[in-house]
Image (tube, rainbow, N blue to C red):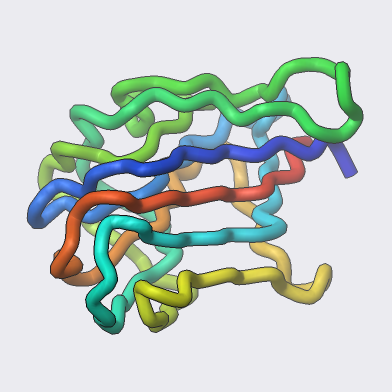
Length: 167
């Protein structure tokens, strides 16, 4: 077990036909943040009072490059005051290792391998808190994303929080 970090972005706007909430590009083998475990994912939306069902996925991005995203660096929460995250916020999180970005605005020719799909009501939000034996391990030099399959009716007011264990 390494350090626990949280990647959080609030009140974001999604881009038509892109719909990526988070991109995490793990570091190369033997570097900080080469092995990242996803411990919790929360998604909520405050931009609408109209109910809509949302379909999404946790996916590996196997092709394409995120050209533009909002750079957000995970915050270290355990141990408090410990070393910084091995991941760094970047406007091009799929362009190099050990980068993170949220609310992508351009994703050129992406190809995904979905490994967890989910549905939720936008007014209720979504939380994924697996049993410890079911937590996702993202291996070195891998691009992992949380995305929606289709544009939601309201593209504004989205919040995403991902709790990570970095090794």
